[in-house]
Image 1 (cartoon, rainbow, N blue to C red):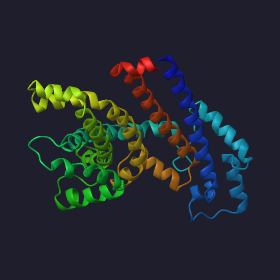
Image 2 (tube, rainbow, N blue to C red):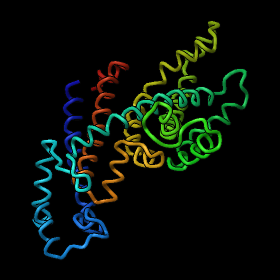
Image 3 (cartoon, rainbow, N blue to C red):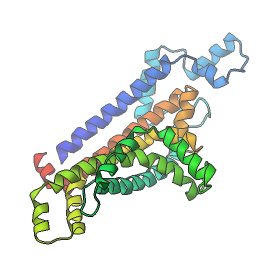
Image 4 (cartoon, rainbow, N blue to C red):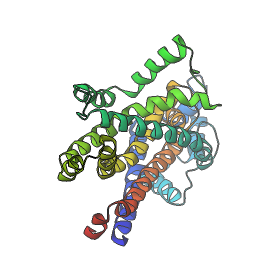
Length: 309
C-alpha cells in the first residue's frame, strides 16, 4: 500500500505542476493583453496609464520572473486576485466548488444506474432475444454525442416543449435534473461499455455454468456476475467524476448555472491568468485525489491487487 501511496503522491505533484505551467504558457501565448482585456474594449487610457497598470499588476516583469512568482504563490495555494472580479481566487473557487460538486455527485449516481442497466441488457439473457444486440450499440452513441448537443436536446424537449424542468438556474433541486442528465449520459456510455464487456467475460467463466447446473435463478447468477465484473467499472467512476469537472464548463454555460465551469469560462474569455491557473490546479488535484482514493480502495475490493503491489 505504501509504494502505491508514494507513487500517487509524486504523480499528483507532477500533474499539478505540469497543469499550472502549461496553462500559464498558453494564456500568455494567446493574443491580447490581460490589462487591456480587463479594462474592456471601450476603455480610453493613454499608453502611460496602461503602462502604470501593467506595473501595478506585475506584467512589466520578465516572463520567467512572473512564472516563478506565480508558481511560488501557487505552491502556497495563493493564486492572487481575479483580474475581472477583484476577488481572491481561492475564495472564489471555494464558493463555486459546492455547486459543481453537487452536480457531479448527482450525475455520477445517474451514470452508474443507467450504465449498469445498459450493461445488463446488452447481455443475451434468456427471455430477451435480440435485445442485447440493440442495447449494446447505445453506449457508443452516448459517448460519441458531444455534451453541448445533449444539453441542447434536453433543453428543447424537457424544458421548452414539455415544461417538465426549468431551463436555467441553480437555486433549487429541480434545476439539477437536466444538467445532471447532460453530464451523466456520456458517463453512462463509458460505464456501459466497460461493465458490459466485463460481464460478458464473466458469463463465459466456469462458475456461471456451475450455478446454472445447480438450478440457480438468472437473477442470482447476474448478482454474482456483477460482483465479479464491477471492479473495472469502479475505476471508471473516478474518471467520470474527473471528466465531469471538464464538461461542467459547457454544461454550466448552457444551463446558466453557477460553479467551477462558469468561473473557468469567464476566466478564459477575459484571459484572467490568476483565476484560470487556480482553477486548473484545483481540477488537476481533484482528479488525482479521486484516482488515489480508487487505488487505495482497489486492494480492499480485490486482494490480488494488494499482493501484486
